[in-house]
Image (cartoon, rainbow, N blue to C red):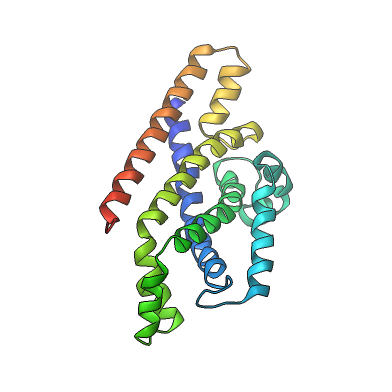
Amino acid sequence: MLQQAFIETLTMVGASTAIAAVCGLPLGLILACTASGHILEQPVINRILGAVINVGRSIPFIILMVAVIPFTRFVVGTSIGTTAAIVPLSIAAIPFVARLVESAVFEIDRGVIEAAQSMGSSPWQIIWKVLIPEARPALVLGLTITTVNLVGYSAMAGAIGGGGLGDLAIRYGYQRFRADVMLQTVVLLVILVQALQTLGDWASRKLSRR
């Protein structure tokens, strides 16, 4: 059961991280580039998108899971299990990734952007050939932070039958007073988080140009 729960946790975290990266990256780029003084300055769009993202980030995950149950059923046909847990995990992670992408873009030296503009680069060329390459180390670190947070969220998903190590700890550890099961799940979660953080730090250093 421990092995199966570990695989379920990896599945939930991996799938939701991928979805959050695919959806959060463009949102974060739009949020950064439409900010005041940036290459696609659009204050109205920036404020609206920022407000929507802030709303998404402000909802506690345990409440979000319950609130999106009808949407989860519509998307995957059920609200229980590993597949169902991926939906709220992704929804929770997308605004988080968007803000991390925005921060990574804002850290880029304005001189690099101005140099690209002086050479006649269009905004989209600047995004794809300047902003994303320059922000890659920070983006990798941000994605690592997101993945680690999702490990914790996936454990909470076990509270409503989401599967994974959290579900195992609650049903077989807490409810059956099995301290050994609780300890083993905690140890596995710690090892997983340490491995993910080490891998993310290594990848960020490899991509860094400094």
